[in-house]
Image (cartoon, rainbow over all chains, first blue to last red; front, side, top):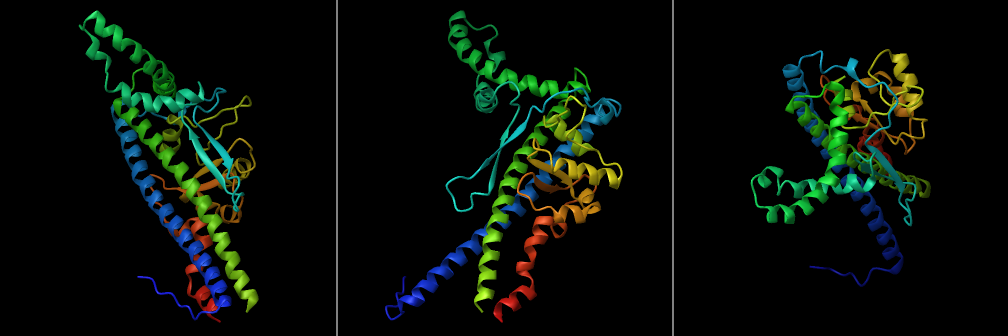
Length: 215
Length: 107
């Protein structure tokens, strides 16, 4: 139910609008801080899962096979990178935005499509085609070929990343890799939430400083 | 160490032609300081992940850093859980919730 006070003078309405804007900024700041803390909590649990899986892999493969000594020190670029853009056309245009490009060393399209196609590929596993008719194979092979072509570079990059631990690795190590990939995605969200939080904090701070100067 | 290994498995490791890496496994405080200064001035780094207990060793450096890019994210480590009270971003904004700031606003 709305209560409209028609007796309020226009000057007070201007101040009310200003207060409404300030309240909106404060609320936005509180929301971003809450989201930041929630994401940190989520990251902690994802990392714990990754550490546990890594410890399991070390237990099954041996400590000498899962070791920092085996890290690749030859020159190579990062397969996963970040794209940083500035929010254009907004008042807070200095706020950076981070986008994760996973396994993008082969091609950007493959890394973006690979994740979508891999879920479709799960519906048509290759094992199902063994012993099936030629016609069935012809129909499905073309769609699987497309999804495999896109998915292969991503899987190749994943395998290449694990190759420093040997050709045959424990399934727990692969699971740990996926956990840390999920942690990366959460970290990018945290980075974006952090920049929003800092931006709204600066706005609230400016308003507070302005209010103190008026007094 | 496990944190570094894990993220390297996720594909973020980079080694340039001079064999300089974009990661460091904790050694001495001096090396941590030098590496932090190097990573925060490199143009090919957008986010710096630092375990919070390592960040506490160079807290004065981390708290004095205020550029938007690269973003400094303090993360938990296996043996040291995350403490929001020590986070540099949260400690920067927490004064808004202190009694002193509320009292000064009311004057």
